Image (cartoon, rainbow, N blue to C red; front, top):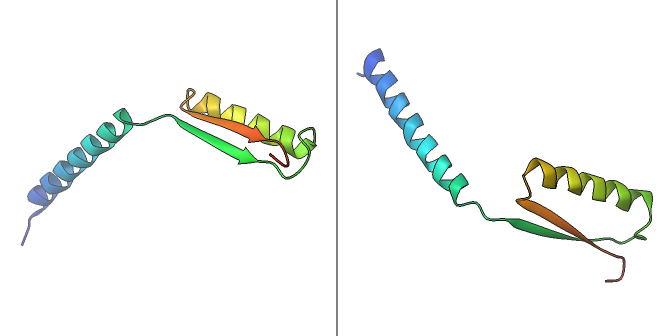
Length: 74
């Protein structure tokens, strides 16, 4: 049976291993460009709100996620 000290070591090592994987994954992150098809007019309030949301996401991700709104019928 494992005692508390060896269990703590095991959990700590697992945490370190997991953090190394996460850091490696973040370092290899690619830029993402998302195209969104609008089904309503480009000047509608909903599309304006969508563009505001997209600008916020782009700013929060330091430009790694960008968006393009395609007008209705495109």
